[in-house]
Length: 307
Length: 307
Image (tube, rainbow over all chains, first blue to last red; front, side):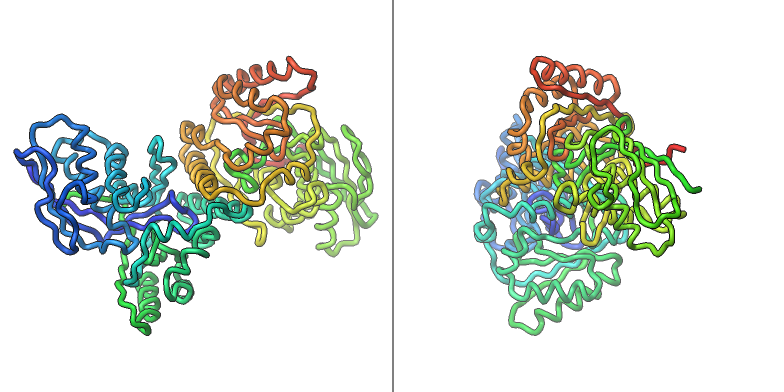
Protein backbone atom coordinates (compact mmCIF):
# COMPACT_ATOMS: atom_id res chain seq x y z
CA UNK A 1 0.00 0.00 0.00
CA UNK A 2 1.54 3.30 -1.14
CA UNK A 3 -1.45 5.60 -0.72
CA UNK A 4 -4.13 5.97 1.90
CA UNK A 5 -7.21 8.15 2.25
CA UNK A 6 -8.35 8.98 5.74
CA UNK A 7 -11.11 10.79 7.60
CA UNK A 8 -9.82 12.91 10.46
CA UNK A 9 -12.67 14.00 12.73
CA UNK A 10 -13.55 17.24 14.48
CA UNK A 11 -13.48 17.15 18.27
CA UNK A 12 -14.76 19.02 21.31
CA UNK A 13 -12.24 19.81 24.04
CA UNK A 14 -12.80 20.67 27.71
CA UNK A 15 -16.41 19.36 27.90
CA UNK A 16 -17.47 21.88 30.57
CA UNK A 17 -15.97 20.54 33.81
CA UNK A 18 -12.94 18.85 32.19
CA UNK A 19 -10.97 21.94 31.21
CA UNK A 20 -7.66 21.16 29.51
CA UNK A 21 -7.93 17.39 29.91
CA UNK A 22 -11.23 16.05 28.50
CA UNK A 23 -12.49 15.77 24.96
CA UNK A 24 -14.84 13.87 22.70
CA UNK A 25 -14.90 12.99 19.03
CA UNK A 26 -17.48 13.96 16.39
CA UNK A 27 -18.64 11.76 13.57
CA UNK A 28 -20.29 13.97 10.98
CA UNK A 29 -17.63 16.67 10.67
CA UNK A 30 -14.03 16.15 9.71
CA UNK A 31 -11.26 16.57 7.16
CA UNK A 32 -10.15 14.13 4.51
CA UNK A 33 -6.52 13.63 3.75
CA UNK A 34 -4.56 11.55 1.25
CA UNK A 35 -1.09 10.39 2.27
CA UNK A 36 1.19 8.93 -0.38
CA UNK A 37 4.59 7.28 -0.12
CA UNK A 38 6.96 8.81 -2.69
CA UNK A 39 10.62 8.45 -3.68
CA UNK A 40 11.51 12.01 -2.82
CA UNK A 41 12.64 12.19 0.77
CA UNK A 42 10.87 14.48 3.22
CA UNK A 43 7.29 15.67 3.77
CA UNK A 44 5.63 17.40 0.85
CA UNK A 45 2.21 19.05 1.02
CA UNK A 46 1.00 18.89 -2.55
CA UNK A 47 -2.64 19.92 -2.38
CA UNK A 48 -4.88 21.89 0.02
CA UNK A 49 -8.58 22.43 -0.50
CA UNK A 50 -11.20 24.20 1.59
CA UNK A 51 -9.11 26.83 3.31
CA UNK A 52 -6.02 28.85 2.57
CA UNK A 53 -3.20 27.21 4.51
CA UNK A 54 0.59 27.12 3.99
CA UNK A 55 2.13 24.47 1.71
CA UNK A 56 5.52 24.73 3.39
CA UNK A 57 5.64 21.61 5.63
CA UNK A 58 7.31 23.35 8.55
CA UNK A 59 4.65 26.07 8.52
CA UNK A 60 1.67 23.72 8.27
CA UNK A 61 0.22 21.86 11.27
CA UNK A 62 -0.08 18.57 9.35
CA UNK A 63 3.42 19.10 8.02
CA UNK A 64 5.00 19.82 11.40
CA UNK A 65 3.53 16.71 13.03
CA UNK A 66 4.52 14.63 9.99
CA UNK A 67 8.07 16.04 10.17
CA UNK A 68 8.29 15.21 13.90
CA UNK A 69 7.42 11.61 13.04
CA UNK A 70 9.55 11.52 9.88
CA UNK A 71 12.61 12.69 11.80
CA UNK A 72 12.14 9.76 14.20
CA UNK A 73 12.33 7.35 11.25
CA UNK A 74 15.31 6.35 9.19
CA UNK A 75 13.88 5.93 5.69
CA UNK A 76 15.09 6.70 2.16
CA UNK A 77 11.68 7.78 0.86
CA UNK A 78 9.21 10.51 1.64
CA UNK A 79 5.49 11.31 1.84
CA UNK A 80 3.07 13.56 0.01
CA UNK A 81 0.10 14.95 1.85
CA UNK A 82 -3.15 16.21 0.33
CA UNK A 83 -5.50 18.03 2.69
CA UNK A 84 -9.24 18.38 2.01
CA UNK A 85 -10.25 20.62 4.86
CA UNK A 86 -13.85 20.79 6.05
CA UNK A 87 -13.26 21.97 9.63
CA UNK A 88 -12.84 25.72 9.63
CA UNK A 89 -9.63 26.88 11.28
CA UNK A 90 -10.44 28.84 14.45
CA UNK A 91 -13.90 27.32 14.89
CA UNK A 92 -13.04 25.66 18.21
CA UNK A 93 -13.77 22.10 17.13
CA UNK A 94 -10.24 20.88 16.68
CA UNK A 95 -9.36 21.96 13.15
CA UNK A 96 -5.62 21.94 13.77
CA UNK A 97 -5.86 18.72 15.79
CA UNK A 98 -7.53 16.96 12.85
CA UNK A 99 -4.68 18.02 10.57
CA UNK A 100 -1.99 17.13 13.11
CA UNK A 101 -3.44 13.70 13.79
CA UNK A 102 -4.26 12.96 10.16
CA UNK A 103 -0.76 13.11 8.71
CA UNK A 104 0.90 10.96 11.38
CA UNK A 105 -1.92 8.41 11.43
CA UNK A 106 -1.77 8.08 7.64
CA UNK A 107 2.02 7.74 7.48
CA UNK A 108 1.92 5.16 10.29
CA UNK A 109 -0.60 3.07 8.35
CA UNK A 110 1.57 3.18 5.20
CA UNK A 111 4.55 2.02 7.25
CA UNK A 112 2.70 -0.94 8.82
CA UNK A 113 1.99 0.73 12.18
CA UNK A 114 5.40 1.04 13.82
CA UNK A 115 3.93 3.45 16.39
CA UNK A 116 0.96 3.09 18.75
CA UNK A 117 -1.73 5.76 19.05
CA UNK A 118 -0.16 7.42 22.09
CA UNK A 119 3.18 7.68 20.30
CA UNK A 120 1.42 9.13 17.26
CA UNK A 121 -0.28 11.68 19.49
CA UNK A 122 3.15 12.73 20.80
CA UNK A 123 4.16 13.63 17.23
CA UNK A 124 0.81 15.35 16.66
CA UNK A 125 1.38 17.53 19.74
CA UNK A 126 4.24 19.19 17.83
CA UNK A 127 1.89 20.11 15.00
CA UNK A 128 -0.86 21.30 17.33
CA UNK A 129 1.68 23.52 19.10
CA UNK A 130 2.27 25.40 15.83
CA UNK A 131 -1.38 26.50 15.86
CA UNK A 132 -2.01 27.06 19.54
CA UNK A 133 1.46 28.12 20.72
CA UNK A 134 1.43 25.60 23.55
CA UNK A 135 1.57 21.83 23.80
CA UNK A 136 -1.72 20.19 24.64
CA UNK A 137 -3.60 17.09 23.57
CA UNK A 138 -7.22 17.62 24.57
CA UNK A 139 -8.36 17.73 20.92
CA UNK A 140 -5.71 15.35 19.58
CA UNK A 141 -6.60 12.50 21.95
CA UNK A 142 -10.28 12.18 20.96
CA UNK A 143 -9.42 12.61 17.25
CA UNK A 144 -6.90 9.77 17.54
CA UNK A 145 -8.77 7.39 19.87
CA UNK A 146 -12.43 8.35 19.38
CA UNK A 147 -15.08 8.55 22.08
CA UNK A 148 -14.35 10.44 25.27
CA UNK A 149 -10.72 10.80 26.30
CA UNK A 150 -8.99 12.10 29.39
CA UNK A 151 -5.43 13.33 28.99
CA UNK A 152 -4.14 12.36 32.43
CA UNK A 153 -0.74 13.88 31.84
CA UNK A 154 1.36 15.31 29.02
CA UNK A 155 4.75 14.26 30.38
CA UNK A 156 4.66 11.34 30.12
CA UNK A 157 1.70 11.43 27.75
CA UNK A 158 -1.07 9.26 29.19
CA UNK A 159 -4.46 9.12 27.50
CA UNK A 160 -7.43 7.33 29.03
CA UNK A 161 -10.35 6.11 26.95
CA UNK A 162 -13.55 6.74 28.91
CA UNK A 163 -16.62 4.66 27.97
CA UNK A 164 -19.32 6.38 25.95
CA UNK A 165 -23.02 5.69 26.61
CA UNK A 166 -25.12 4.70 23.63
CA UNK A 167 -27.54 7.21 22.15
CA UNK A 168 -25.45 10.25 23.06
CA UNK A 169 -25.43 13.01 20.43
CA UNK A 170 -23.64 16.32 20.19
CA UNK A 171 -25.08 19.47 18.71
CA UNK A 172 -22.52 22.16 17.90
CA UNK A 173 -23.09 25.73 16.81
CA UNK A 174 -20.25 27.74 15.32
CA UNK A 175 -20.90 31.47 15.29
CA UNK A 176 -18.47 32.81 12.72
CA UNK A 177 -16.55 35.26 14.84
CA UNK A 178 -12.85 35.05 15.50
CA UNK A 179 -11.44 34.17 18.93
CA UNK A 180 -7.71 33.63 19.03
CA UNK A 181 -6.61 30.75 21.28
CA UNK A 182 -4.01 33.10 22.76
CA UNK A 183 -6.73 35.63 23.61
CA UNK A 184 -8.93 32.89 25.13
CA UNK A 185 -5.94 31.82 27.25
CA UNK A 186 -5.07 35.35 28.31
CA UNK A 187 -8.56 36.03 29.67
CA UNK A 188 -8.22 33.23 32.23
CA UNK A 189 -7.07 34.03 35.76
CA UNK A 190 -3.86 32.44 37.03
CA UNK A 191 -5.52 31.59 40.33
CA UNK A 192 -8.99 30.24 41.08
CA UNK A 193 -10.96 29.97 44.31
CA UNK A 194 -10.33 26.66 46.07
CA UNK A 195 -14.08 26.26 46.58
CA UNK A 196 -14.68 26.54 42.84
CA UNK A 197 -11.87 24.10 42.12
CA UNK A 198 -13.50 21.59 44.50
CA UNK A 199 -16.84 22.02 42.71
CA UNK A 200 -15.08 21.47 39.38
CA UNK A 201 -13.39 18.20 40.38
CA UNK A 202 -16.56 16.95 42.06
CA UNK A 203 -18.33 17.53 38.75
CA UNK A 204 -15.50 16.07 36.71
CA UNK A 205 -15.28 12.91 38.81
CA UNK A 206 -19.05 12.64 38.54
CA UNK A 207 -18.91 13.02 34.76
CA UNK A 208 -16.39 10.16 34.51
CA UNK A 209 -18.65 8.03 36.74
CA UNK A 210 -21.72 9.05 34.72
CA UNK A 211 -20.05 8.02 31.45
CA UNK A 212 -19.01 4.67 32.98
CA UNK A 213 -22.54 3.98 34.20
CA UNK A 214 -24.47 5.50 31.25
CA UNK A 215 -26.25 7.67 33.81
CA UNK A 216 -27.65 10.52 31.70
CA UNK A 217 -29.09 12.30 34.74
CA UNK A 218 -25.68 12.37 36.37
CA UNK A 219 -23.99 13.45 33.14
CA UNK A 220 -26.51 16.30 33.02
CA UNK A 221 -25.81 17.36 36.61
CA UNK A 222 -22.05 17.14 36.03
CA UNK A 223 -21.77 19.27 32.89
CA UNK A 224 -21.07 22.51 34.74
CA UNK A 225 -18.00 24.68 34.46
CA UNK A 226 -17.51 27.14 37.31
CA UNK A 227 -13.89 27.91 36.42
CA UNK A 228 -13.52 28.86 32.76
CA UNK A 229 -16.99 29.56 31.38
CA UNK A 230 -17.52 32.77 33.42
CA UNK A 231 -14.51 34.29 31.64
CA UNK A 232 -14.55 32.84 28.14
CA UNK A 233 -18.29 33.11 27.63
CA UNK A 234 -17.79 36.88 27.54
CA UNK A 235 -15.97 36.41 24.22
CA UNK A 236 -18.95 34.68 22.59
CA UNK A 237 -21.90 36.90 21.66
CA UNK A 238 -25.30 35.54 22.79
CA UNK A 239 -23.62 32.71 24.72
CA UNK A 240 -26.05 32.83 27.64
CA UNK A 241 -29.05 32.87 25.31
CA UNK A 242 -27.70 29.90 23.32
CA UNK A 243 -27.03 27.88 26.45
CA UNK A 244 -30.42 28.68 27.93
CA UNK A 245 -32.19 27.75 24.69
CA UNK A 246 -30.25 24.48 24.45
CA UNK A 247 -31.08 23.43 27.99
CA UNK A 248 -34.70 24.46 27.50
CA UNK A 249 -34.85 22.26 24.39
CA UNK A 250 -33.64 19.29 26.44
CA UNK A 251 -29.85 19.30 26.15
CA UNK A 252 -28.06 17.47 28.98
CA UNK A 253 -25.56 20.29 29.10
CA UNK A 254 -23.89 22.98 27.06
CA UNK A 255 -20.54 24.70 27.16
CA UNK A 256 -17.78 26.30 25.17
CA UNK A 257 -16.11 23.95 22.71
CA UNK A 258 -12.37 24.25 23.26
CA UNK A 259 -11.54 27.93 23.42
CA UNK A 260 -14.60 28.80 21.37
CA UNK A 261 -16.36 30.36 19.60
CA UNK A 262 -18.25 27.10 18.94
CA UNK A 263 -20.71 26.05 21.61
CA UNK A 264 -21.30 22.33 22.18
CA UNK A 265 -24.25 20.53 23.69
CA UNK A 266 -24.64 16.88 24.64
CA UNK A 267 -28.02 15.24 24.22
CA UNK A 268 -29.74 11.95 24.84
CA UNK A 269 -31.09 10.82 21.48
CA UNK A 270 -31.01 12.23 17.95
CA UNK A 271 -34.44 13.81 18.21
CA UNK A 272 -33.40 15.96 21.18
CA UNK A 273 -30.13 16.83 19.44
CA UNK A 274 -32.11 18.04 16.41
CA UNK A 275 -34.52 20.01 18.58
CA UNK A 276 -31.57 21.65 20.31
CA UNK A 277 -30.08 22.49 16.90
CA UNK A 278 -33.28 24.27 15.87
CA UNK A 279 -33.56 26.23 19.08
CA UNK A 280 -29.97 27.47 19.07
CA UNK A 281 -30.07 28.29 15.35
CA UNK A 282 -33.00 30.58 16.17
CA UNK A 283 -30.81 32.67 18.49
CA UNK A 284 -28.18 33.55 15.87
CA UNK A 285 -30.71 33.73 13.04
CA UNK A 286 -31.99 36.94 14.67
CA UNK A 287 -28.50 38.49 14.50
CA UNK A 288 -26.12 39.38 11.67
CA UNK A 289 -23.68 36.68 12.77
CA UNK A 290 -23.22 33.82 10.30
CA UNK A 291 -23.20 30.36 11.83
CA UNK A 292 -22.91 26.62 11.12
CA UNK A 293 -24.69 23.92 13.08
CA UNK A 294 -23.58 20.29 13.32
CA UNK A 295 -25.51 17.37 14.81
CA UNK A 296 -23.41 14.25 15.33
CA UNK A 297 -23.35 10.99 17.25
CA UNK A 298 -20.25 10.58 19.39
CA UNK A 299 -17.63 9.01 17.13
CA UNK A 300 -16.31 6.07 19.11
CA UNK A 301 -13.58 4.93 16.67
CA UNK A 302 -11.81 8.24 15.97
CA UNK A 303 -9.70 8.76 12.88
CA UNK A 304 -10.25 6.11 10.19
CA UNK A 305 -9.17 4.83 6.81
CA UNK A 306 -11.59 5.60 3.95
CA UNK A 307 -10.25 3.44 1.16
CA UNK B 1 -37.23 -5.42 67.36
CA UNK B 2 -36.62 -2.88 70.14
CA UNK B 3 -32.83 -3.00 70.33
CA UNK B 4 -30.07 -3.16 67.77
CA UNK B 5 -26.31 -3.41 67.97
CA UNK B 6 -24.32 -1.94 65.12
CA UNK B 7 -20.77 -1.56 63.86
CA UNK B 8 -20.01 1.92 62.56
CA UNK B 9 -16.76 1.98 60.61
CA UNK B 10 -13.84 4.37 60.45
CA UNK B 11 -13.30 6.12 57.12
CA UNK B 12 -10.68 7.98 55.13
CA UNK B 13 -11.70 11.28 53.55
CA UNK B 14 -10.11 13.20 50.66
CA UNK B 15 -8.06 10.27 49.27
CA UNK B 16 -5.26 12.53 47.95
CA UNK B 17 -6.70 14.06 44.77
CA UNK B 18 -10.36 14.03 45.91
CA UNK B 19 -10.19 16.77 48.53
CA UNK B 20 -13.52 17.47 50.21
CA UNK B 21 -15.53 15.03 48.04
CA UNK B 22 -13.99 11.53 48.09
CA UNK B 23 -13.78 8.94 50.84
CA UNK B 24 -13.48 5.23 51.52
CA UNK B 25 -14.56 2.92 54.30
CA UNK B 26 -12.41 0.77 56.60
CA UNK B 27 -13.31 -2.67 57.83
CA UNK B 28 -11.13 -3.43 60.83
CA UNK B 29 -11.63 -0.22 62.79
CA UNK B 30 -14.93 1.16 64.02
CA UNK B 31 -17.25 1.91 66.89
CA UNK B 32 -20.02 -0.25 68.26
CA UNK B 33 -23.29 1.26 69.30
CA UNK B 34 -26.48 -0.07 70.86
CA UNK B 35 -29.71 1.73 70.01
CA UNK B 36 -32.82 0.92 72.05
CA UNK B 37 -36.43 2.01 71.62
CA UNK B 38 -37.81 3.24 74.99
CA UNK B 39 -41.04 4.76 76.30
CA UNK B 40 -39.44 8.00 77.37
CA UNK B 41 -39.61 10.47 74.50
CA UNK B 42 -36.44 12.04 73.13
CA UNK B 43 -32.84 10.91 72.59
CA UNK B 44 -30.98 9.67 75.65
CA UNK B 45 -27.29 8.78 75.68
CA UNK B 46 -27.04 6.28 78.51
CA UNK B 47 -23.55 4.83 78.21
CA UNK B 48 -20.23 5.87 76.65
CA UNK B 49 -17.09 3.75 76.72
CA UNK B 50 -13.62 4.29 75.30
CA UNK B 51 -13.37 8.07 75.36
CA UNK B 52 -14.70 10.90 77.47
CA UNK B 53 -17.57 12.44 75.49
CA UNK B 54 -20.66 14.42 76.56
CA UNK B 55 -23.84 12.56 77.57
CA UNK B 56 -26.05 15.56 76.82
CA UNK B 57 -27.65 14.64 73.43
CA UNK B 58 -27.42 18.14 71.99
CA UNK B 59 -23.71 18.28 72.83
CA UNK B 60 -22.84 14.84 71.44
CA UNK B 61 -22.32 14.15 67.71
CA UNK B 62 -24.40 10.95 67.82
CA UNK B 63 -27.04 12.78 69.81
CA UNK B 64 -27.27 15.76 67.48
CA UNK B 65 -27.71 13.62 64.37
CA UNK B 66 -30.25 11.46 66.21
CA UNK B 67 -32.14 14.58 67.31
CA UNK B 68 -32.18 15.91 63.72
CA UNK B 69 -33.82 12.66 62.66
CA UNK B 70 -36.07 12.40 65.72
CA UNK B 71 -37.43 15.90 65.11
CA UNK B 72 -38.43 14.83 61.60
CA UNK B 73 -40.50 12.00 63.08
CA UNK B 74 -43.81 12.18 64.92
CA UNK B 75 -43.52 9.42 67.52
CA UNK B 76 -44.59 9.01 71.15
CA UNK B 77 -41.51 7.08 72.21
CA UNK B 78 -37.79 7.72 72.38
CA UNK B 79 -34.39 6.10 71.93
CA UNK B 80 -31.44 5.25 74.17
CA UNK B 81 -27.97 5.22 72.70
CA UNK B 82 -24.93 3.37 74.05
CA UNK B 83 -21.61 4.24 72.45
CA UNK B 84 -18.61 1.89 72.56
CA UNK B 85 -15.98 4.06 70.93
CA UNK B 86 -12.87 2.56 69.37
CA UNK B 87 -12.03 5.35 66.91
CA UNK B 88 -10.10 8.03 68.71
CA UNK B 89 -11.62 11.50 68.36
CA UNK B 90 -9.27 13.74 66.40
CA UNK B 91 -7.42 10.90 64.71
CA UNK B 92 -8.53 11.89 61.20
CA UNK B 93 -10.29 8.63 60.34
CA UNK B 94 -13.88 9.75 60.78
CA UNK B 95 -14.47 9.33 64.51
CA UNK B 96 -17.29 11.86 64.60
CA UNK B 97 -18.72 10.56 61.31
CA UNK B 98 -18.98 7.05 62.76
CA UNK B 99 -20.93 8.39 65.72
CA UNK B 100 -23.15 10.61 63.56
CA UNK B 101 -23.96 7.82 61.12
CA UNK B 102 -24.39 5.17 63.81
CA UNK B 103 -27.26 6.70 65.72
CA UNK B 104 -29.41 7.53 62.69
CA UNK B 105 -28.72 4.19 60.99
CA UNK B 106 -29.69 2.32 64.17
CA UNK B 107 -32.88 4.29 64.78
CA UNK B 108 -33.88 3.86 61.13
CA UNK B 109 -33.49 0.09 61.42
CA UNK B 110 -35.65 0.00 64.57
CA UNK B 111 -38.34 2.01 62.76
CA UNK B 112 -38.42 -0.30 59.71
CA UNK B 113 -36.28 1.91 57.44
CA UNK B 114 -38.50 4.93 56.74
CA UNK B 115 -35.46 6.81 55.38
CA UNK B 116 -32.97 5.89 52.65
CA UNK B 117 -29.21 6.14 53.16
CA UNK B 118 -28.91 9.56 51.55
CA UNK B 119 -31.66 10.92 53.82
CA UNK B 120 -29.93 9.39 56.83
CA UNK B 121 -26.70 11.06 55.76
CA UNK B 122 -28.53 14.41 55.71
CA UNK B 123 -29.35 13.94 59.39
CA UNK B 124 -25.82 12.78 60.13
CA UNK B 125 -24.43 15.97 58.55
CA UNK B 126 -25.98 17.87 61.48
CA UNK B 127 -24.07 15.76 63.97
CA UNK B 128 -20.82 15.96 62.02
CA UNK B 129 -21.16 19.76 61.94
CA UNK B 130 -21.03 19.81 65.76
CA UNK B 131 -17.53 18.33 65.62
CA UNK B 132 -16.06 20.03 62.56
CA UNK B 133 -17.94 23.37 62.63
CA UNK B 134 -18.96 23.02 59.00
CA UNK B 135 -21.31 20.78 57.06
CA UNK B 136 -19.58 18.12 55.01
CA UNK B 137 -20.16 14.48 54.17
CA UNK B 138 -16.86 13.11 52.92
CA UNK B 139 -16.50 10.80 55.95
CA UNK B 140 -20.23 10.22 56.46
CA UNK B 141 -20.85 8.94 52.94
CA UNK B 142 -18.34 6.06 53.01
CA UNK B 143 -19.37 5.13 56.59
CA UNK B 144 -23.00 4.91 55.46
CA UNK B 145 -22.58 3.34 51.99
CA UNK B 146 -19.24 1.56 52.24
CA UNK B 147 -16.59 1.33 49.55
CA UNK B 148 -15.48 4.49 47.77
CA UNK B 149 -17.91 7.38 47.66
CA UNK B 150 -17.97 10.70 45.86
CA UNK B 151 -20.07 13.47 47.40
CA UNK B 152 -21.08 15.21 44.18
CA UNK B 153 -22.94 17.98 45.97
CA UNK B 154 -24.20 18.84 49.45
CA UNK B 155 -27.23 20.84 48.36
CA UNK B 156 -28.97 18.77 47.20
CA UNK B 157 -27.00 15.94 48.80
CA UNK B 158 -25.88 13.55 46.06
CA UNK B 159 -23.62 10.62 46.90
CA UNK B 160 -22.12 8.39 44.21
CA UNK B 161 -20.91 4.88 44.98
CA UNK B 162 -17.71 4.26 43.02
CA UNK B 163 -16.72 0.63 42.33
CA UNK B 164 -13.92 -0.81 44.43
CA UNK B 165 -11.34 -3.19 42.93
CA UNK B 166 -10.80 -6.48 44.71
CA UNK B 167 -7.64 -6.98 46.71
CA UNK B 168 -7.30 -3.33 47.72
CA UNK B 169 -6.10 -2.75 51.30
CA UNK B 170 -5.54 0.37 53.34
CA UNK B 171 -2.76 0.87 55.84
CA UNK B 172 -3.28 3.77 58.22
CA UNK B 173 -0.87 5.22 60.74
CA UNK B 174 -2.12 7.55 63.45
CA UNK B 175 0.62 9.58 65.09
CA UNK B 176 -0.91 10.72 68.34
CA UNK B 177 -0.57 14.43 67.99
CA UNK B 178 -3.49 16.83 67.97
CA UNK B 179 -4.53 18.69 64.81
CA UNK B 180 -7.76 20.63 65.11
CA UNK B 181 -9.97 20.46 62.01
CA UNK B 182 -10.34 24.24 62.25
CA UNK B 183 -6.54 24.64 62.22
CA UNK B 184 -6.23 22.26 59.26
CA UNK B 185 -8.85 24.35 57.43
CA UNK B 186 -7.22 27.66 58.32
CA UNK B 187 -3.86 26.64 56.83
CA UNK B 188 -5.39 26.21 53.36
CA UNK B 189 -5.20 29.07 50.86
CA UNK B 190 -8.46 30.56 49.55
CA UNK B 191 -7.09 30.55 46.02
CA UNK B 192 -5.08 27.95 44.15
CA UNK B 193 -3.15 28.08 40.88
CA UNK B 194 -5.34 27.14 37.92
CA UNK B 195 -2.55 24.87 36.65
CA UNK B 196 -2.56 22.95 39.93
CA UNK B 197 -6.34 22.71 39.90
CA UNK B 198 -6.17 21.21 36.38
CA UNK B 199 -3.62 18.64 37.56
CA UNK B 200 -5.87 17.80 40.50
CA UNK B 201 -9.00 17.16 38.42
CA UNK B 202 -6.99 15.22 35.83
CA UNK B 203 -5.82 12.99 38.69
CA UNK B 204 -9.25 12.79 40.26
CA UNK B 205 -10.97 11.86 37.00
CA UNK B 206 -8.23 9.29 36.46
CA UNK B 207 -8.75 7.85 39.94
CA UNK B 208 -12.47 7.40 39.25
CA UNK B 209 -11.61 5.70 35.95
CA UNK B 210 -8.96 3.58 37.67
CA UNK B 211 -11.43 2.38 40.30
CA UNK B 212 -13.99 1.53 37.60
CA UNK B 213 -11.46 -0.46 35.61
CA UNK B 214 -9.53 -2.00 38.56
CA UNK B 215 -6.41 -0.49 37.05
CA UNK B 216 -3.95 -0.45 39.96
CA UNK B 217 -1.24 1.26 37.91
CA UNK B 218 -3.59 4.10 37.09
CA UNK B 219 -4.80 4.33 40.70
CA UNK B 220 -1.15 4.61 41.69
CA UNK B 221 -0.45 7.39 39.18
CA UNK B 222 -3.61 9.24 40.23
CA UNK B 223 -3.08 9.33 44.00
CA UNK B 224 -1.37 12.71 44.01
CA UNK B 225 -2.51 15.83 45.78
CA UNK B 226 -0.93 19.05 44.53
CA UNK B 227 -3.44 21.32 46.28
CA UNK B 228 -3.77 20.45 49.96
CA UNK B 229 -0.87 18.18 50.88
CA UNK B 230 1.80 20.89 50.52
CA UNK B 231 0.07 22.86 53.30
CA UNK B 232 -1.35 20.27 55.65
CA UNK B 233 1.63 17.95 55.57
CA UNK B 234 3.50 20.66 57.50
CA UNK B 235 1.23 19.90 60.48
CA UNK B 236 2.25 16.23 60.59
CA UNK B 237 5.74 15.46 61.91
CA UNK B 238 7.76 13.07 59.72
CA UNK B 239 5.07 13.14 57.01
CA UNK B 240 7.53 13.12 54.11
CA UNK B 241 9.49 10.25 55.64
CA UNK B 242 6.33 8.20 56.22
CA UNK B 243 5.11 8.76 52.68
CA UNK B 244 8.50 7.92 51.18
CA UNK B 245 8.77 4.74 53.27
CA UNK B 246 5.24 3.67 52.29
CA UNK B 247 5.88 4.16 48.58
CA UNK B 248 9.23 2.41 48.86
CA UNK B 249 7.49 -0.55 50.53
CA UNK B 250 5.12 -0.82 47.57
CA UNK B 251 2.11 1.34 48.48
CA UNK B 252 0.08 2.54 45.48
CA UNK B 253 -0.15 5.94 47.10
CA UNK B 254 -0.17 7.75 50.42
CA UNK B 255 -1.75 10.91 51.69
CA UNK B 256 -3.27 12.69 54.64
CA UNK B 257 -6.41 11.01 55.97
CA UNK B 258 -9.05 13.72 56.26
CA UNK B 259 -7.47 16.69 57.98
CA UNK B 260 -4.89 14.44 59.65
CA UNK B 261 -2.88 13.58 61.60
CA UNK B 262 -3.48 10.02 60.34
CA UNK B 263 -1.74 9.11 57.10
CA UNK B 264 -3.41 6.62 54.78
CA UNK B 265 -1.94 4.36 52.13
CA UNK B 266 -3.67 2.20 49.55
CA UNK B 267 -2.10 -1.10 48.59
CA UNK B 268 -2.62 -3.98 46.21
CA UNK B 269 -2.81 -7.09 48.39
CA UNK B 270 -2.62 -7.77 52.11
CA UNK B 271 1.05 -8.67 52.04
CA UNK B 272 2.03 -5.28 50.64
CA UNK B 273 -0.30 -3.56 53.12
CA UNK B 274 1.46 -5.37 55.97
CA UNK B 275 4.90 -4.53 54.58
CA UNK B 276 3.87 -0.89 54.35
CA UNK B 277 2.65 -1.03 57.96
CA UNK B 278 6.04 -2.28 59.14
CA UNK B 279 7.98 0.31 57.21
CA UNK B 280 5.93 3.29 58.41
CA UNK B 281 5.88 2.03 61.99
CA UNK B 282 9.67 2.12 61.85
CA UNK B 283 9.61 5.88 61.20
CA UNK B 284 7.65 6.82 64.32
CA UNK B 285 9.27 4.08 66.40
CA UNK B 286 12.45 6.16 66.27
CA UNK B 287 10.65 9.18 67.74
CA UNK B 288 8.86 9.89 71.02
CA UNK B 289 5.49 10.11 69.21
CA UNK B 290 3.00 7.38 70.11
CA UNK B 291 1.15 5.86 67.19
CA UNK B 292 -1.44 3.29 66.11
CA UNK B 293 -1.35 1.36 62.85
CA UNK B 294 -4.35 -0.23 61.15
CA UNK B 295 -4.36 -2.58 58.17
CA UNK B 296 -7.78 -3.10 56.63
CA UNK B 297 -9.46 -4.28 53.48
CA UNK B 298 -11.78 -1.70 51.94
CA UNK B 299 -15.15 -2.21 53.62
CA UNK B 300 -17.64 -2.41 50.77
CA UNK B 301 -20.84 -2.63 52.83
CA UNK B 302 -20.36 0.27 55.27
CA UNK B 303 -22.21 0.42 58.57
CA UNK B 304 -23.81 -2.88 59.58
CA UNK B 305 -26.00 -4.64 62.12
CA UNK B 306 -24.13 -6.91 64.54
CA UNK B 307 -26.96 -8.81 66.21
